[in-house]
Picture 1 (cartoon, rainbow, N blue to C red):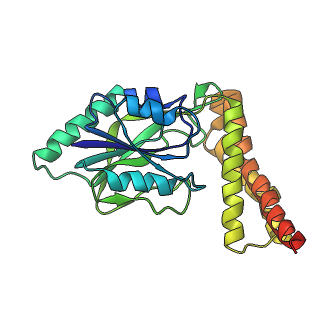
Picture 2: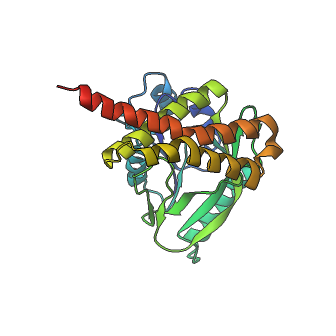
Length: 261
């Protein structure tokens, strides 16, 4: 059995195309939905998914792991709703499953390459390709640490490379990118606050100047983001701006503490 697992929250724009790309090989589709207020759940059920409802968490990897825990297949694909499995990857998954059933010794999990859409184009440089993620694994041999929104799975055993790609439509518009930018900077600020990282002169220098500069230079120059034109410039710029915005939000946390009675 091949299981496909997802965590969702208000993904009605993506869920149909996502599930359509796995329909021909998925024996079960497990979705853990975090309080969607749109038609995500309704559409997913129409497409044959088993949907489990829970709260929407800042670290959505918690809900991803919940979905992974419910999978029954020998081979599991963890997918995001804004991703599509291309034909080459679909064929690789089916072939791998047959090899697994045949008793062949295979890796515990596989890296999957991603093509990331940003500002109307799939980025080729800037550290955004091949953007490998561990998402295909043998049941019971991989898990999410659930500590960060960009973490990789922990795997018991060897990790191989899958053929094919995810087509990642995470930022179909710049406004959508900014919405996620706000979410991720808030998550970073909360992590710093929970770790009792207090604003200081040294931290301000790092988050206002050093981290933005080195991030931009790394993505735009070292990783040749300039090849992607204006989209590459924007991606490098806002990747750097993540740090000062997160720091400002961290300061807000402490200012609210001082105002509290």
